[in-house]
Amino acid sequence: MGKSTIITSQKKFRNLLDKSITARELTFVAALMLCLTPFVSPPVALLIGFAIAQFTGHSFLHLNHKAISFLLKVSVVGLGFGMNVQSAVNAGKEGILFTIASITGTLGLGLLLGRFLKIEKKTSHLISCGTAICGGSAIAAISPLIKAEEKQISVALGAIFILNSIALFLFPFIGHQLHLSQMQFGLWSAIAIHDTSSVVGAANKYGAEALQVATTVKLARALWIIPVALLTTVFFKTGKQKIKIPYFIGLFVLAMIINTYLPIIHPVSACIVDVAKIGLTVTLFLIGAGLSRSVLKSVGAKPLIQGIILWVVISAVALFAVMHLAA
Image (cartoon, rainbow, N blue to C red; front, side, top):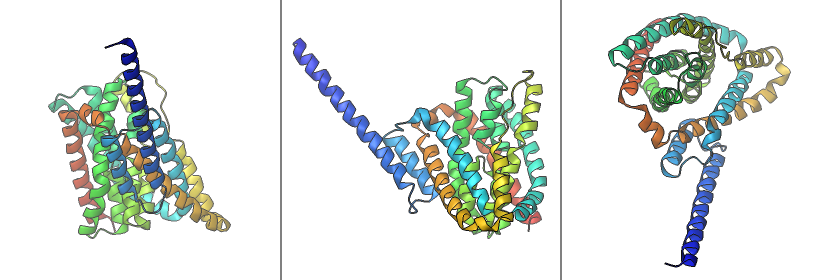
């Protein structure tokens, strides 16, 4: 084979590769644009993203984490413009005891399971914190405190996101089958679903009151990152480290106050809430698009088993509690 023939073949290969990459990017952008329409619900957006991850791949994977973090925070703050302060306070009071009991119990059980299954200590702790508090946000906050390696963080995030995806579909179905009230479902989803995005997505599908209860309780739960992070530094003896405080929760509270005490803003508030829900749909699309085959394979059996057991236990106990103790 002559030199000119080899060069020609290489050029053809590059052209073919370029066309493939272009087609992949166009597919991703088209799917993203579809998620901006009212025809795609958050659960469907998650499925579309997951399909993209499996068949064409995420064209902008290096930007995915930052995009998810930003969109989730903006969307949650936007949802605050559709909520009332007094209702939120009542929901917070209802959920405080459930929150304390569930976080303490989950962290304790996670510690025991990690030792029993002989899972690497840092990975086990990240999975426990993600399950107990607020999924990926908790893992992101805790991982630098224990100086976790990228592989440990990826395994914990993978396990949490897989279970989150299942919960988004499973919880509304169970709630309807058991005829849970809006309050009951809101509390249950806020306690038992890991990530804020999936909590809001599931509660939004269930009803407006469930959405308000779930969002308020989940964000109040997220503040527990601070005491858990402090205990983590003691447990792992890492000394003084900077703790990432979820400041956007303050903006969420401010949005609720504005919506409650400035009625003149109500016509605008409705538009903000609609945009926030679209933002949430796109967030779940991006989460699904990040669940590539390599992410799924990297989790491994034991960490996933720990995550499943923790999730099943907290879900079952929380469900029993809200059915018998919540109105």
